[in-house]
Image 1 (cartoon, helix red, strand yellow):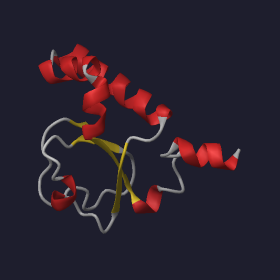
Image 2 (tube, one colour):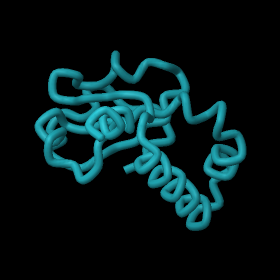
Image 3 (cartoon, helix red, strand yellow):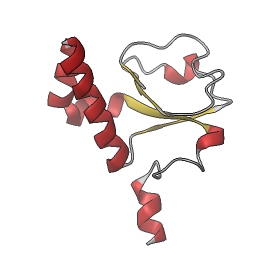
Image 4 (cartoon, helix red, strand yellow):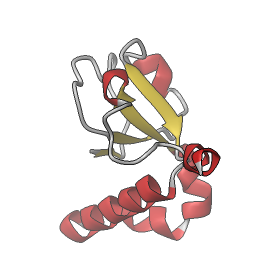
Length: 107
């Protein structure tokens, strides 16, 4: 899921699988999320970053969103505002590592 707006309090409570990309423009995600059960980090994997860009572009095609149109154009600046969020229990089950440095270190 891609969340381009502000999340509500206790975001992620009950999240048992999947991945979320949260546009944390205000920088207050961790104060609003259930961090006991979630792992949240800046984008650190080309694989997941390309997936996020593709999802944003699909959203733009489907909705005409001006924000989704702007984000890829200003990606070098805007990418820093995204957090990749995954339930802690799923970290060892995802198909690709969240951080490309882990792949480089194991090679």
